[in-house]
Structures are given as structure tokens and as C-alpha cells.
Image (cartoon, rainbow, N blue to C red; front, side, top):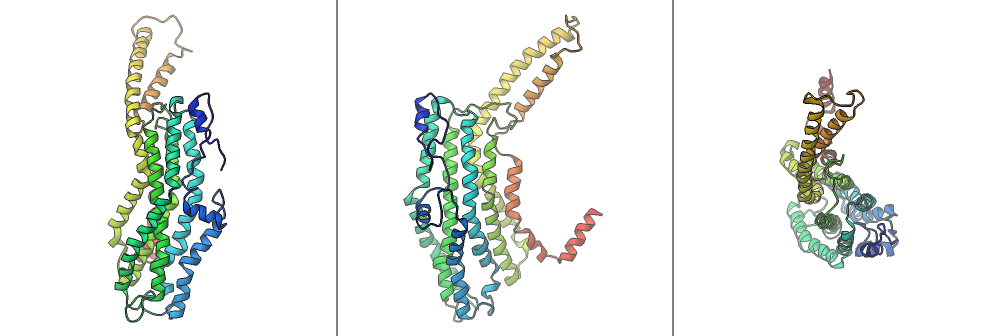
Amino acid sequence: MPAAAYPTAETAEAAAVATTQPFSLCLGGPLFQFLRRTRLCDETLGLLHRRIAVAVAAGWLPLAILSALQGRLLDGRLPFLSDIGFHVRFLVVVPLLIGAEVLVHRRLRPILEQFFSRDLVRPEQIATFADAVDEAMRWRNSKLVELLLIGLVYAAGVGFALDRYTLLGGDAWYASSGGRISPAGLWLVFVSLPILQFLLLRWYFRLFVWGRLLWRVSKLDLDLTVTHPDRSGGLGFLSDSIIAFLPLSAAHGLLFSGMIADRIFFTSARLTDFQMEILGAAAILVALFAGPLVVFWPQLAFVKRQGLHQFGALSQTYVREFRAKWLSGRLAMEPLLGSGDIQSLADLGNSFGAAEQMRFAPVRPAALLAVVGAFLAPILPLTLTMMSPEALLGRLVGLVF
């Protein structure tokens, strides 16, 4: 990986930063190094198709073969090919979780570099910023963390899944006719589900690393401006990090849609039965992706409060002089036409208005809507289970006409 991640300067701190590797939330960890050695990944997360093919081959293909050998591809109460939730998880969600690494890697690195390109980090705090980045990369590269995640998957997840699929039993592809779990079910519990669970847990851990990095940066005395047009003191670019995580939001929506689809088709449930779960999950995802940006609240609130006081004092001085010159009956020495005083008064008002509208967190509402939209998009097609496509089209036409 190339060195010199951030611009050099005439300070000792900047010289230390020059040796810091470029930050990436995804280029590191034992699994990443294993994938590189096995040529399933390169230094920039290329060869994505190979990783997806291996994941599908390990998590989905053996189950299809074992189900066929058991005669459960199309037969039984829940045949293999009819298990919508399973196919969504391992043919769509797992590839999406793997592919999301590429987008997050490409989006977050330039976002973090904006702190330097915009001169938000003061020279005396560059070394502290670099230390926060180095700490984040140490967490990302931790072998112990990934081992703990694998241990958690097999210590908790496997035991729960084994009990669950054994109890479900019945005439399903993952259970034998006697109610015991089948060979396909054992592969599902010990191989397929752990792959999905590990990928999810590793993403949650990465979000923790990202949140901790931003928390440490928020403790710096950043050079923020209350009148910045982004209404976030100059930190509005951080809202783009939420967009980088949209594939994860969509992956959770797909997990929900698959689970709900199985309940609708095999247990006579209705989509409306899950409205609280859907709303709750959407709220959790918003908190998960936007929450790390809220750590800038104290600093942005201070900058806004201080800026309003300063603009208030400046405005008071200006309007008094404006009144004395133009409104107090004393004729100004210069003509009214062509004077810039009125425009300056308007500009001052606009600047004060921008300061008043400054947000307490660098989060754009459109980014939050995008998170919710990505989560709900896979669930929306299930509304067709509540009415026929013809009836739905008729209602839409009725709204227009």
C-alpha cells in the first residue's frame, strides 16, 4: 500500500503523518490477508467475482446437492427450491455483504482525507489525528477480534440454529422425515449460516471502528465555520459516509423480505403483521449508520452558539451605523443609487440566517431517507401479497386521475 496518505507540512507532526498508510475500513484483517494469499482478492479489493463465487459455492451449492440427494428439491412441506428466505440470504445478501466492501473502501478514504484538503485539522493536532487513524487500522487488523467473532458465531449462533431447525423439523428440506435434522440441515447450521453471521458481525465491528475514529476526531479543536453553506460547519462531507453504507441497509432489507415472504407463503401471515418490526429495524439502521456522526454535536453546537454571538455583535454595530447614515434624517454624502450598503446589509442578514440554520450533526436528511429507502425497497414487492397487481395498478391510476 502506498505511503504518504496525507499532505506534508512544515511541522514535525505532519512528518509523522507522512509515514501513515492510507486509511481503509476494509483493507485489513486475517481474512483479507488469507484472501490475498489465495488470490481471491488483491490490494484494492479487486477480483470480487471470485470471492462471491466461492461464498455461493460454499454456502448454497452443497445444500442444493444434498437436498437433491434427499429428494427434497421440490417435495415436502418446505422443499429446497421453495425456501425463498434461504435463497435470498445466500444468493443475494451474502454477495451484497461482500461487494459492499468495495464501495465502502472507495468512499470512506477520500471522505477522511477531506479533513486535510479543507484544512479542518489545525497543524498542532495533526499528530493526534494520525494516532486516531493508526488506532483504527490496528483495530481493523486485529486477529483477536476476528477469532472472537468466529467463536461467537459457533458458540452462540450454531447452538441456537441447531435447536431452531431441529424444532421446526417437519417435512422440510433441512430435516429428515423423523423430525431430526438432515445432512443438508447440518451443512446449513455449521457452514452456511456461520458464513452469513460472520460477515454481518464483521460489518458491525467495522462500524464500531468507524464510529470510534470519528469520536476521537470530534475531540480535536477543528477549524469549523458557522456560515459554511453545508450547514454543518464544513463537515457536511461526512454525510456521504452514510451513502457508502447503503448496500448494508439493502442487505438487511433483503433479510427481512426473505423472512417475511416465508411467513406469508407458508404460515398464512400478513405483511401488516410485521409493521412494527419493519419500522424498528429501519430506525436501528438509521442509528447505526448516522449515529457515528452525532459525536460532532458538542463541537458544532459550540461553534453555532459562538458564531451567533459574534454575528449578533457585528450585526448590531453595522445596523446602528446604517441607521445613522441612511435612516436618521442625516443625508449621506454619497448617493443612494449605486451604494453597496443595502446589499451589505442583506448579505449580513443571509450570513446570520445561515448561522441560525446550522445543524448539530453533519447529517443530510436526504442521506437518512436513502437508508430507509434502501431497506424498504426489497420489502415493498411483498405488498403484492395483499392485493393483485391489477388492483394495485387500479389504485395507482385512481390516485392520478
